[in-house]
Length: 200
Length: 215
Image (cartoon, rainbow over all chains, first blue to last red; front, side, top):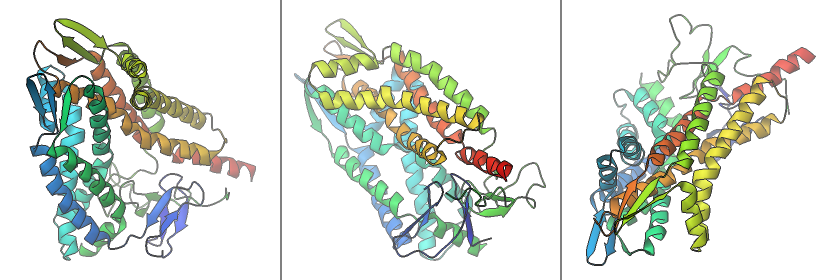
């Protein structure tokens, strides 16, 4: 039974076959991705997660944009946007923004580090299966790349009205998106699941 | 296409949603609900009540879509004058001022994608309920697209957040979020949940039932 895998989109059973490095297996009936073999998955994910955590801190501490109109200037960080919405009574919107652009990326990065760092050095972290399950489950709710597009749109929108100065956090953000995407692309969840079985 | 191909369901196996481990269905349903022995996720052969849940969420999103587009999402107060903007009036403003790419981005992300997503999900639900045989592969692809594009609708919410945070210069210029933003955020979140609760394997189940009948 371990040699079989069911397509998660059409339920068709497939026999697992060894893949070449960097190869991907797709369902023959519906074309969904079944599994793939990644190069140095753990090493790469660990490196990218560490880089991501550093960038995440920079992106949240430094100002994102500065808005200058006549003699007045207004700086904004990620969290100050959430606070401004909350102050206006828009707590639902504030909560959604906080969750998707701050909390979920942070949980994803720290959760991934908690899982990958011990595994890389052949230890099995406590509660590995449930931790990794939650980290994977959070994935659709982290919307950093969408946030970046939002920054771009607001930039154009306000550029005519006043002077806008991009801040340090903006560059950290751009880098963070690429790091997160690269980390997601190099992760091979089957390695983690297989290791979690061996240790138990 | 091999219609007689064995599925996990026909082989009495259950594939875990979370870690994709295959488990024997019979040995699992002892307690109230079955749990994956490897990762601890609840096991279901198909997502529970997929059709009813997806319908409920799709209908809720359709209802919220109306105030999201009719009510203002931002209010600009400049020198004592207040101006309310809906999503569409923002798009029209950008078209008039010549910022075509931005107008297109906002229109696609905020108006077109949520509506398209809801229409596709409605069609998929109807096709599953009428046991349609029409192009299962393409319908699965449609589902995959809906799942992937939904998140991009959040753009407008982020734009509002940034505008509100940046433009608060007292009497000179202040931007406030309008009630439309709340409904719009709800539409985006609800449609993401709707796409998650739909089970694409239902599209294929009817294929197998029909094959068996023809045999």
